[in-house]
Image (cartoon, rainbow, N blue to C red; front, side, top):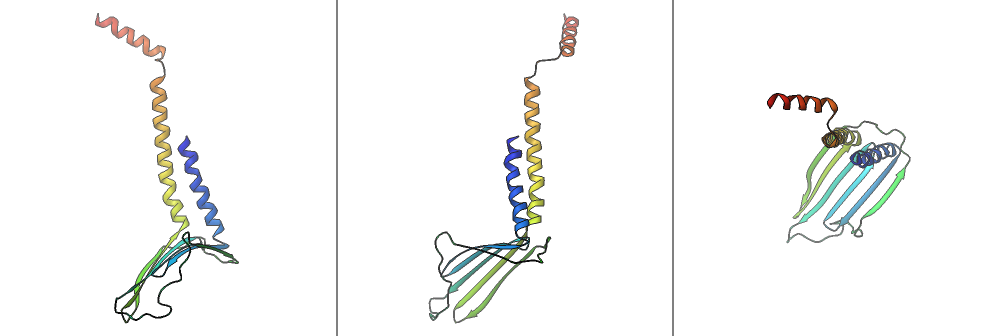
Length: 163
């Protein structure tokens, strides 16, 4: 049953994150001058966003063109005070190309994955793998058991009739 106990950890983490996201927002950000990645846990969903800038070689350099550079591991932020968080949000996804001017193109992509959907997708997989492991273990144990007396008697009778 080690798969059961190992698989229980993600369930506990997802349930804890889901409950925590009703009241708090936790954000991780990593950026460099041409790209920005954001992962935020709030409102019962995981919000992922990617932003990047492509600049043509002949584009003019100007202030505010890119993003400020974060450290190698990114930056974490946490804030609270949310009272009316949605418990079961819907999936949302969008991507757009915007701000095309003078050889500068900014792209944006957003994905919002509800935590209830992650949990609903994980539970059947975990249950199936745990059931499969238990079934294999039970078959292995049954194969190692000595034959019962009924089996021996039937086997001996069958041998007597073949001689």
